[in-house]
Length: 198
Length: 213
Image (cartoon, rainbow over all chains, first blue to last red; front, side, top):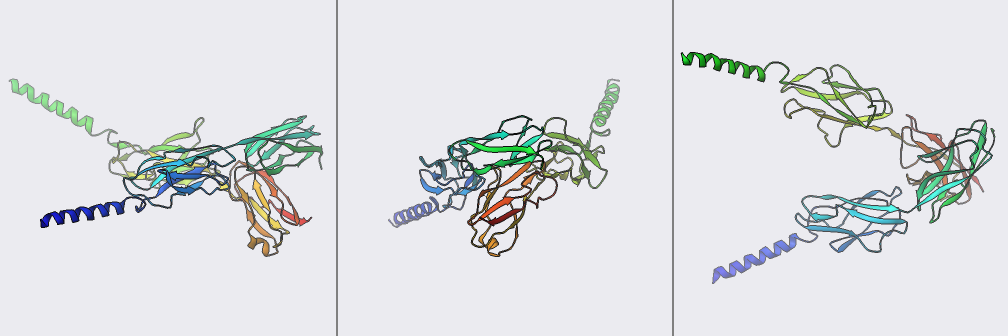
C-alpha cells in the first residue's frame, strides 16, 4: 500500500518536472537572419503561435530571435504569418525553418524579394564621349549623342541618387530630378542636360 | 638447401618493404593550400617566418593554389602567415577552416591552408554645414542598396559644421553617388564631390552645404 503512494507521488513529480522543461522554458535561441525587409509588417510564427514582428532595416538585412527560448528536442516550425508580407515585397520565403532543437537555432533564413522598378531618364545636348552616370555602386556608360539612359532597377521604397561620375569630353552635364525614393511606379523623369565645359 | 633459398628471399622482401616506407620524400609534407578571392597582386606568404612566397591572382576563377617549395617532416609544426597583403585587399584564414593556417604535419593526410581575401572597404562622408536644431529631416543616401543617413539631433543642435559618414562602407573600385533624398526643414542642401570611385583611403570630401530656403 505504502509503496503505491510513493510510486504515484514519484510519477506526479516526474510529470511536473517534464512539463516545466517543455514550452518556452528552455535555454536555446530560436532565430536566424532575414533579408529584403525594408518596411514594417512582417510577422513570423513558430508552431502556429509565438508571433515575432520583424523590424525593418535600412539595408533590408538583419537578425531575429524569438523572445521565448526553446529547449533541446523541441520541434520548431517557423512560418511567415499569412497576410503579413510588407507591401513593398513581391514575396517572402522561409528556409531551414523546421526541425528539432539540438543547440541554439540560428540558421533560419527569411528572404523577402522586393518589388523593383526602372530608373531611367533623358539626356539632352550630349555630344562628347565618356559620360558615366552612377546610382551608388551601379554605373552606366553613355555614348556620345545618346538621348536616354537606364540604370539598374531599384527596389520599391529604396532611395536613389543619380550623379555624374565622369563628365563627357569637352562638356559638363548636370542632373535634375536625380534623387528620391522609389515609389510603386518606374522613375523616368531624371533629366541630364549637357552643355559646353564649365 | 631449401631453407637457404627462402632466407635470402625473405631478407630481400623485407629490404624492399623498408625502402618503400622510409627514405625518399615519402614522409615529407608540402605546406600548401589555396587563396580565395584574390584579385590584386602583392600577396606574400611565409611559413614559420621563412622564405617569402608570392601568390598572384588566378587568371580565371576565384581561387588560386600555392605550395611552399621547402617540405617539412612528419610532426613538424607549420604556421603560415601573411607577410604582405595584396593591394586593396585584406586576407585571413577562411571561416570554413579557421585553424588551417597552423597545425602539425601528419595530423591530417595532407596540409590544406585556406586563406580568403576580401576587398577593403572604407567609409564615405564629409562635412555638413549650415544646419541648426530647427533644420531636422535631412536624409542622405549613396545609391539604392546601402540605406540612408540622417544626422542626429545632437549633431545639428551644436550649430556648427560636423563630420558624417554614410552607414555602409564602400569597397575598393566601387562607385558611390551621394544625394539628398529629403531636404531638411527650412534649408536647401547641396552635395559637393558627390560621385567617385573608392580608392584606398576613406572619402571625407563629400561635403553637404545647407542654406536658408
